Image (cartoon, rainbow, N blue to C red; front, side):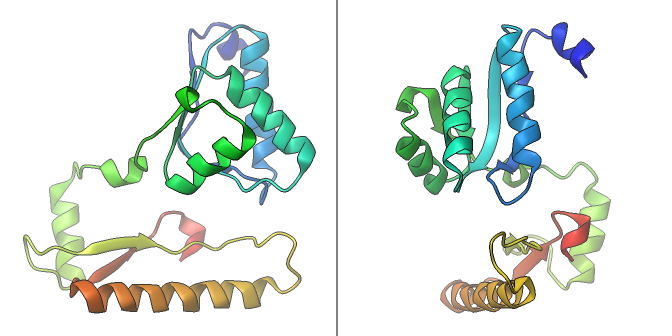
Length: 178
C-alpha cells in the first residue's frame, strides 16, 4: 500500500518473470516502481526474467524505470541481452540465479517422502524443471501453442536425459500449472 511504501527505506521487487507483456501484471509492477521513484525510495529488482516487450510505449516506460533503479538482477542471459537492447547500462544489472534454484529444503522429511514417492534413491542426482501454462498473447489458438510447447519441452527433456542419464523431475511452480 501507499502508506507502507511512504515509510520504506528501500523497495525490493519480488523475484519472478512479471516484467514482460504477456500479462497485465507488468503495468502494476511498473506503476509501483514509478511511485517508489517519485517518493525518492531506491528500488532493487530481484532476479527476473525480463522481456520480451512488444509495445514501444511499455519498452520506453520500462527503460525509464530500470535506469532509475539502484540495481536490476536478471535470471538468464536472454534477459541481459534484452536489457542491453533497451540501452540499460551494464553496471545497472547483473546475473543472479533464479531464487527457486537456491532453495534449501527446511522440511527434510517432506522432501524425503516426496523423493521416495517418485522412486529416487537417497543421494541420487536428478534434474528438475517446470512446465507452465503459458498465455501465448497474440496467438489465436492458445491450446495448439501450449501443446506445441509441451511437445518441444518433452523432446528437449528426452534429449537431456539421453545425454546425462539422470532422471528428470517436473516441479510444480504454480498451482495452476499442473
